[in-house]
Length: 598
Image (tube, helix red, strand yellow):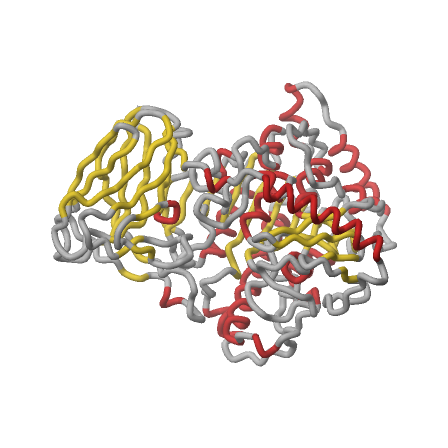
């Protein structure tokens, strides 16, 4: 259902008609692709990390101000019931593929379970094939090594990190197209600057730019400019369970949301400054519910939950040339819908090798048509709920009428037995399919799939003996306590191209502890080296935390070229072993990078 603004100028109506005609006229011949692309709209997708539906002033939160994001909503369409997954990597996979995350192999947020199957085709590949220049700036979280890496999934350019979270947000180690680089300043500001530079390049081709910010995900770091507004702030509205609130965590999260809003304003200014605002589609949403107990419109659940509070996200789409201002879409819309919706709006015809779960919502948004009788499945960690019309069937089989009970407080099973039976059948089918689906975490990590460097970080490794991970959350972690010569670090890998690889080590070694010797083996190859130079590690993340962190600390790492190793193709265990322990500890280990030489 749509409640759209009634008034619109004749000039804007004419502009809308002209743009719609342009974007919907797709020519068949390959020779027309470039010229046709120039007339199509630009696409800017902004995804935040752990920002709940209630973390916007436009949704009623008086604890903060988000005028730039609220402005997007006023200038375009608000997707009132926009649904994502309960956690990070599944939502990203569903956006990129238009398919439920378990169908693309994504079942976890680390240890390889976050990777989309290589056979999946992404929305970026569709726009790339249509002549768009494509880029992603931020947190990827759908695989580190090619063919899972963003440069293998349709993005010409990538700047950011591929892990599930990062250890520090100030001048962090990031990557640009597979090569490690050092970020500039606060990460959200830096990612925005990189996106703006790409948008403002002097090119005729339209752009598809994906900006998956990594805030307000912890660690809770934010510049003083925003923290100072919140560090002593009295919160005016509370969560439905106020006794569970962590006030300092809430203050930090809201400060990070205001920083995001400022950066959204910078992106809007860039579009306006370059004359691209009218014909750019801007999408704004989050990847899951809030990462803490804070005000969220009385909804039940938070991040990780399949209840409404865990999966309902802000959803905004603005296209000034086409979408009427102040449009309200009250149909259920899923993150899987963005793939078919955006390609339809851009007039791109896509042949889908695998059926999409997403539905083209362009007519719903643009013309006031209804979206039909579809259901949306939410899944995480063996919990499954179903959303249909105004109803949600929760993981326990309880039915709620959200139009009258948005907080899921009073089950209505007895009032709607037919609805309960129908949704429980859908729930049962989904559970069987999820249980039977292959899992990407069971696949080895590829080496040398493309010419791009291959990262083998600690997050993807296993250890033997007394070596321990710096934190129970693998993302952005490292290994320490390497005190026994017999202990090893190893990866289950698949060498895709035989040949010679140069290997770089990222490590830490206290002064006086240098001198240990190591051997790297795997794929029929062997490389011996000695750690001759110390590199005392320094914690660089924790001092900026506004509240104590749950994740691993981050450190400054030494870099060392350990030489070349010749590898045969095929599945192999890549093992790093200490062959001679010089002092008390061999080293702290962060990562290996393999670069093919022939």
